[in-house]
Amino acid sequence: MPIIRDFALPKAASDLAVSSATNAFFIAFLASKDPQTNKPWCPDVVAALPTLESTFTGANKPQAAFVEVGQRPEYDHQKSLGRGIFAKLLCRWKDPKNAFRTEWKVNNVPALLRFEKTSEGVKEVGRLIEGEILDQERLEKLLSPSSK
Image (spheres, rainbow, N blue to C red):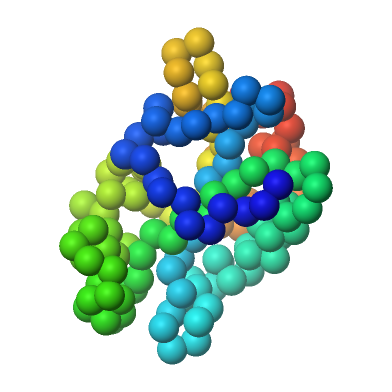
């Protein structure tokens, strides 16, 4: 399945549309691209991107959304000008009120989260952060249906 790069992140995990066929949906929270280099500003994200790309690209691969969490402060103003009020509220990654931190409990990038349908609704059932994504054993465990 293809990676979703223009994913409209809902306000809460309970609003995610998890496929009945796979009962799993992944979201990779990544640093936004530095406008000068066109690469993520976070070196951990740069290191994890090849692994994430290969994990979620191709036939019979799980589906994942790649979501950018925001810019470093020096890029906030420049980035938010073209993206509207919503971007102004979310673009400051270091801001403790950043919606990714408050609503999604993402405090490190990269972060790869697994969501599944449970009897109580859609819930996060697993998470890898930063260098954990590069640990093949941990990544395979998160991808497997028995990752709970």
